[in-house]
Image (cartoon, rainbow, N blue to C red; front, side, top):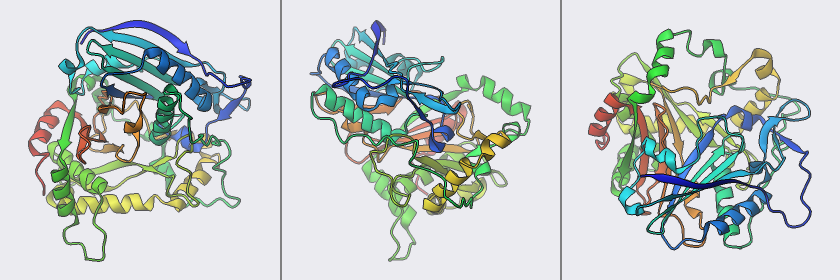
Length: 443
């Protein structure tokens, strides 16, 4: 797949009426600062006919006027705290072509070749949003989109993408994003820290690896040993998995969810494929959206980050020897504990000054190449990424870009739209070969 970049420019917000001041800034709140300091890339594919690039460029300019933070830059506010500078720097906009039909490259495989379909995220990038439109000879369009995680989580980013599609079709963009990140989450008058946030959301940098030189050496050479594999779980397979996970529950107890069942299965199979056994602890890091967990709930249209993490853990031997029911139960209990009390406790701790005074750093660290014996799970099953429509219909394909970070897993609704699920699994090559042999065995 030879991708030719035809043009590169900057798209600035297009306002109706008088443009706002470019001297303002918005402080990053406690949820923004604790998440990953990196760009996240996703890839869409649209069948023809598609609107011209000019329509998408103008739509992006209009959407940036509503989601103004995406057109700014990260920096320090007037008080010296990390902030989003609302300077209308703009978004990077690339136009590219491929002199071949898209069918010859489909379905996309999670490989380094995908990096050609979106702007680079390896080097320092000033723009908080980057877009690449790649036109294929058949008229198909691939959209590569990258966005900085400090600005927004997956739910907020998908809302922006839907707004971009509406603006490109010259339709009213709504609902208007709720952009009150600076004031929405104040600490309580009487702070109450009830949970060990120094061990979950934060850590002391000098103690993260315990000075293990082997770990550092492994991280330095691991990239070429890590492969990403896409697993397709059919609707029928998921149904059997849920039934197996929920077997033995009393009649009055609701069965385990699709997420709990699939993640429990993946946790067990990856642990087995890695060859981990009795006496070794493995834990999951699971993203938990706090919008519906806080009381009162945070609106779905809140623009910013609203994610913390659950950390179910188990002895590896015990996890493998028992059924998926046990793994799903561990996940269910851990996620349930990340409730309103947990989010409030985190706000109080992160606002207390302890993070700065103790030199704590977020455990959400994109520089960690190898997570073994642990796993990180990001589920996009409930996020409306497939609702992006520029005028030619919704995408027929959507996926995360290539991310060779050992131990990361993404769950995405299948492009087939039949209730099946795609899991993107990143492991060492030898572990991945074993995983492929056992990933469809239900125990």
